[in-house]
Length: 81
Image (cartoon, rainbow, N blue to C red; front, side, top):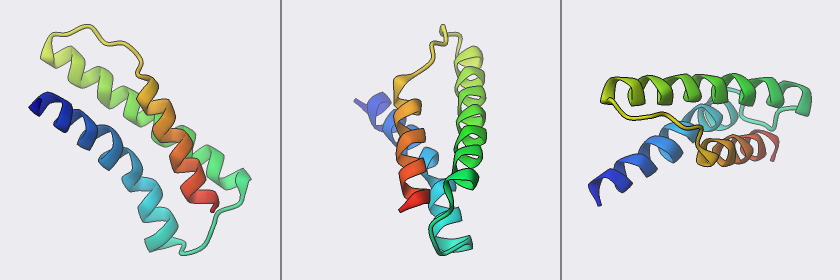
């Protein structure tokens, strides 16, 4: 049960943190699509690298997660709306 809670916090909490900070703390208004897409792609790549690194050091096989794709989509919506 604890593993699921930690996974949710890592995936959603840390995954949406960059979008939240950019949208509501730094820029304070919606981004244009041409700026939001590169931000989301860069954050998604960083999250994939972090996830793969954690899996490697934990000794488990890494598989791309659909949750990170969903987090990227929600981040895009946060940045745009």
